[in-house]
Length: 144
Image 1 (cartoon, helix red, strand yellow):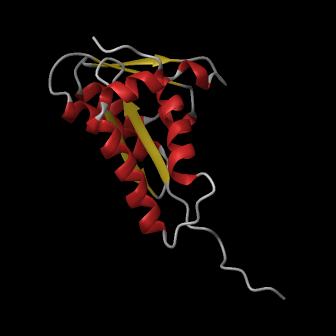
Image 2 (spheres, helix red, strand yellow; image 1 turned 120 degrees about the vertical axis):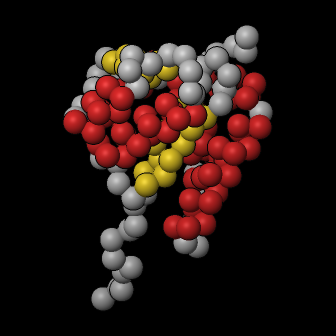
Image 3 (cartoon, rainbow, N blue to C red; image 1 turned 90 degrees about the vertical axis):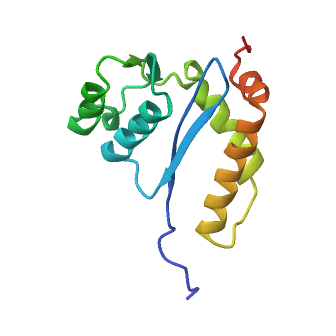
């Protein structure tokens, strides 16, 4: 018998990118449920204290529930959800950034611990928030 380490520890990145400024908001959690999606939306509302926030996303079941609806109601019309067609990740700008993230951070990499992986992930987004023009280029947007 070959001993195995058991089930891998899974973490999920949930994120958003501002199509006009190139700034990102990313949270990494152990689960990707409705509660975590609502947390991401709440983080966006808190980060952008005025104006309308448009969120383009797919019709995943985690995007529709009481927790998400509560954040939308509390945002009092400032949070507008734009639903993209099913199976069309090329229409969502953050998907291009996730692809770039995987190439730069996780592709062919073995991390000593999950903590080191999470640190590398946050480091990637922190570095790219310092160069928003690079992010805008990756997602196919132009700075204003």
